[in-house]
Amino acid sequence: MAYRTTPATREAKRSRREALLRSAHEAVAETGFAAASVKAIAAGAGVSAGTVYTYFGSREELLAEVFQRAAAAEFAAVRDAVARAAADGATDGSLTRELTALVHTFARRALAGRTLAWALLIEPAGELIDAHRLRFRRQYADLTEAIITRAIDSGQAPDQDVHVVGPALIGLISEALTGPLSLEGEAPNLLTTVTHMCLRAIGGSP
Image 1 (spheres, one colour):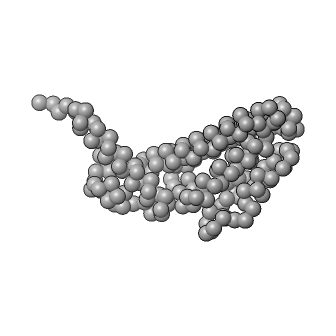
Image 2: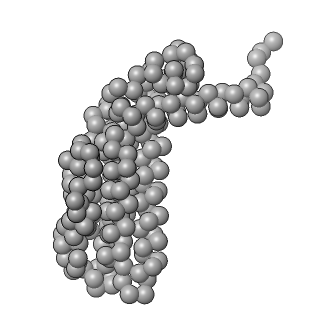
Image 3: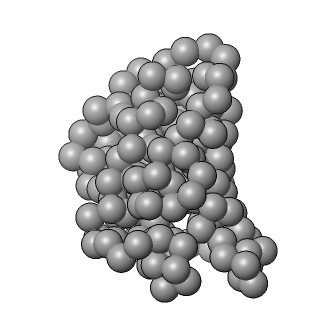
């Protein structure tokens, strides 16, 4: 007789898969991708190491999904903060509000979880994660390009090639965080300095 899944067995499989993803996320947030071993991830989920391969084709596949979920959550937080700032400034121009929301949300979340942020932004982690990383950088660049376009249309910034400047600002923000992410404590004036650099870069007023 052929084996048939039931709602209970499907739920059990889903729960074990989610437990593995939670354990892997916790491992990456604590130690980064390189030190997140299959053995440690399996132990954190309360299963054997071999069980990992029942749900994921490889360690790299598991960690790539961890990256995708974590990066999506970070991007959603930044995107929503920018949207709120845009709505708040709809009547009197919102360039400064939007860029401040982007920089402050991105940086504060990164500094609150430094190891995870380092893993998401910088840590070498293989081709699968590199592909996801490029896709999310593109999403951040699209968000920044939209901010600059609105600023140009409203006269808050001079005309410029947003497809060049947008990705450049994301690179600026990421690079500015590289040093602080490796240090304890918050770098003095980091958020204000980076926000002002971004505004000056596009010809806005700090």
